[in-house]
Length: 249
Picture 1 (cartoon, one colour):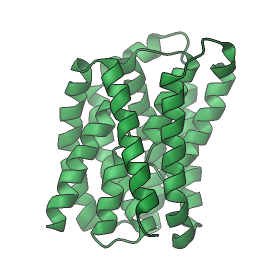
Picture 2 (tube, helix red, strand yellow; picture 1 turned 180 degrees about the horizontal axis):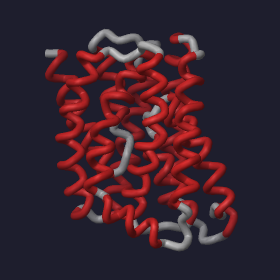
Picture 3 (tube, helix red, strand yellow; picture 1 turned 180 degrees about the vertical axis):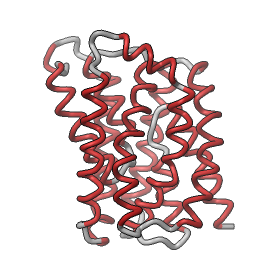
Picture 4 (cartoon, one colour; picture 1 turned 90 degrees about the horizontal axis):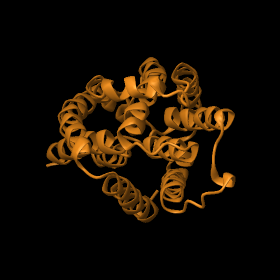
């Protein structure tokens, strides 16, 4: 029964990651339900979802070409920032006690969801809520550290950052988000494997199911209206925020 729950959660996570981000909100609690300690579940979750991110990134390469052609976006700098930040976040997780990590998880999810909802639904049209080039570099650095540390909601944070930067094309934003997520997680994955935190049996199950869900979600993302995709992200974030606050530490 636990096997089925983990596999279904992983498929849904791959779908959600491809559509808007936040899929690890599902696989993280599923791995805890399978008996993994919180930090081990987080590390295994990051490693498991990594192949699916690579696969969806390849499938979204036309969106990456469009992002690279957009003069407003410095893709190489954002990529380098994501790689370094992911490594720092992974190291930070290794030195965090299990009990402390369990207590801060719901706050991390709430923060990610609130930022995304604010960036999408509460535009003022003024410059106060816009990020310039320097601003997006700084924020992406923080997001990358967060992504390497926890991962859940990193996609939501990246989409909100790109929204505050002034981008509105959900396909371009989503494709760029996938690339940056792959880079930040690549550094974290190496760190977690070297530290021996990965439970490979569950990791392989999640990886295979998430790849299948990712391809399904990527094709859906091309056809679903942008506002539905964005609203779905917020709904997922709110539901899982409530879940983690109610879940015993």
